[in-house]
Length: 232
Image 1 (cartoon, rainbow, N blue to C red):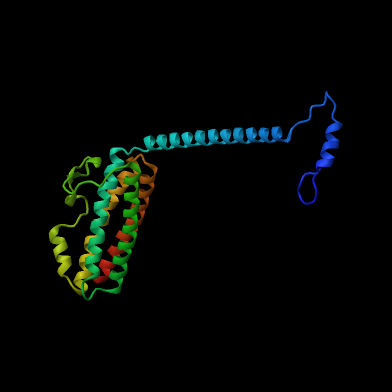
Image 2: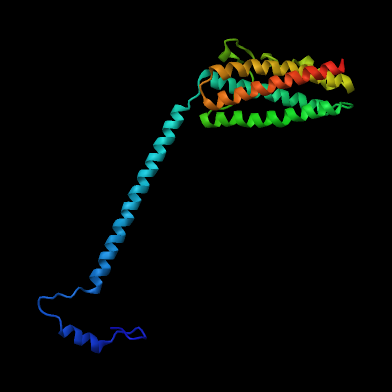
C-alpha cells in the first residue's frame, strides 16, 4: 500500500507479509524491474542489428548501381563533346547580346539559347558527377565516339575563330544575320551528334537528354531559317 503522499505504508506492509505462506514466494519488485531492463536491452540490440543490416543492404545497392551505371564510350564521348558544343553556343549568344543595334527578335533568341543550354550544361555535368568522371581536356581528340575523330574546335557546327571575329564586330542587321547563320549551323551539328547518341548510347539519362536536344534544336533550326529569310 502507498499513502497519498507517496511514502510506503509500513503497517499494512507488515500485515501483508504475514499472510504469505512458505510455498508462496513473493516476487520482489526489483526482479520485475530487472526483467524490463533485459527486455529493453534486447530490443535495442535487435534494432541496432536491423539498422546495421539495412545500412549494409543500402550500401550494396549503391555499389551495384554505380557499377551498372559505368558509361560507355558513346555516353562519355557525347557528354564531354556536347559540353564544349554548348559552351560555344552560350559564348556566341553573349557576344550577340553585347552588339549594338540588334533586333528584339535576335535578343530573344540569344537569351533563350543562354538559358536552355546552360540548363543542359548542368545536366551533362551531372552525368559526369554520377560516373565520377572529369570534363575532357581542351586539346583532346573529340568525336571518336562517332568514329570521326577531330579537334574540339572542329566538331560539327562549331564556329571558327574567323566566324567569331565577324560576330564580335557586326552591328545592327549584320549582327542579326551573323547570329542566325552561325547558330543555325551550330544547331545542325548538335542535332547530328544528339541523334547518334540517342540511338547508340547506353545510359538512359543520356538517351533521354540527347533525344530532347535533337527535337528542340531541330525546331530552332527551322526558326532561324525563317528569321534569315525575313532579313533577306
